[in-house]
Image 1 (spheres, rainbow, N blue to C red):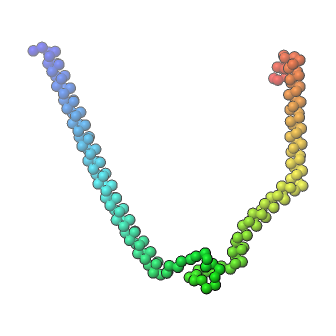
Image 2 (cartoon, rainbow, N blue to C red):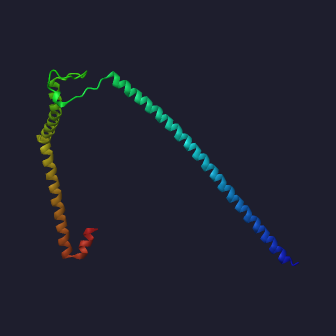
Image 3 (cartoon, helix red, strand yellow):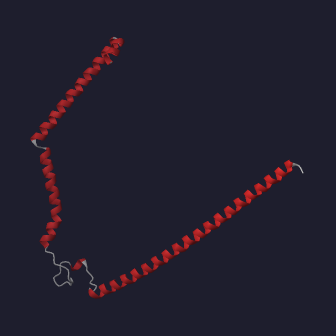
Length: 169
């Protein structure tokens, strides 16, 4: 037989063995992935079942504590219409004097009004007015000087264009 034929057969056999090896590796990899997924799913189901039992236990404990709370404190219905009546059943609620209610109701607006008045007094003080007037005069002078410089430059540019370039530099 021809040696080229033997080489071609050997190469084909080697290629076949490589393809079989790759196919086996892919199959084993897919199987391992399925096994990992199955384990992860089983773990997730176990965690979910543990959480479900914990939620049921907590729900039962909450229901028991609410039942005990309902026995300790009877349900009393409060209406706004019973607010000023002397004989109204108020249960164990503390009595709040009218003076405290008035103090709380008017306290916050009075504090805001006092703070606003203080800020207004500070803003209208003689020192602050003088400082603002000084800043305005200084800014006005600066703007006038800048305007004069710009006018001088434009007159110079119209008279002599080459001199304007030197002045700008």
